[in-house]
Image (cartoon, rainbow, N blue to C red):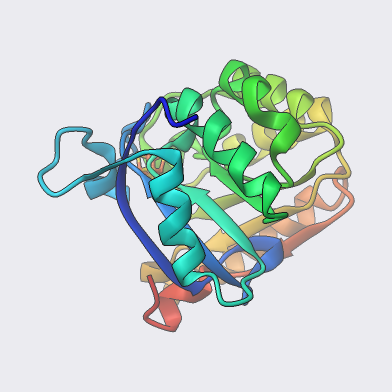
Amino acid sequence: MDTTKAKIVEIFNSVQGEGKYAGSQQVFVRFAGCNLRCSWCDSSHARDLCAPGLLELSPTQTWAEVERLWRGCHSVSVTGGEPLLQGAFLKEFFSILKVYKVKIYLETNGTLPGALKEVVDDVDIVSMDVKLPSSTGCPAYWQEHVDFIRVAWGKDIFIKTVISKSTTMEDMVKAVEMICQGDPTIPLFLQPNYFEINDGIVDKCREFQQYCVNYLADVRIIPQMHKFMNLR
Ligand code: SF4
């Protein structure tokens, strides 16, 4: 039964540019609205729930568009903004995806453990994007992140974070503590800021990697590939 409508920015077919499944073809469903305000948000159009041109779709309508674009994709990337803000919709939408055996890849800022709890049973992959305060100008959400990881236990989860010139080692140390409290076997992806790639940022990522591998099982440096390929 279709009872809820979501505010959706766009639905499209593209290639995942980040993290463990970089290179995979997905259908992306980009939800409007976010609970954070990162200074360099590259989805600022997705933050505004009142932005002109937003789609208002039911779970069935959303599935119809996903199915049209599917063509043997790896999974559906549920992204934003922060998709967990529209939890009631996700519950219904995910139940449809499960009927069609479509893999659910949740792209989230990892600050809403309560909302994750409501839908986690249906989620296959959790891509948790940690915003380090020194990179984004956002407040820290360390405890929320730990709680979030604990709710996601048993799922295919990985963590990504963008490293920029302003990112501090102090934040890196706190991030490692946070991951260790949650689960130190979770892969961590350090993403050198695309705009600073020729500006010493890869060396900085190497320095952070050297530190992180003392505590975490799997730490990789991979840039946001979609930016190099001019993909959405
Ligand atoms: S969490 Fe993502 S969508 Fe939200 S403000 Fe930060 S970068 Fe933008």
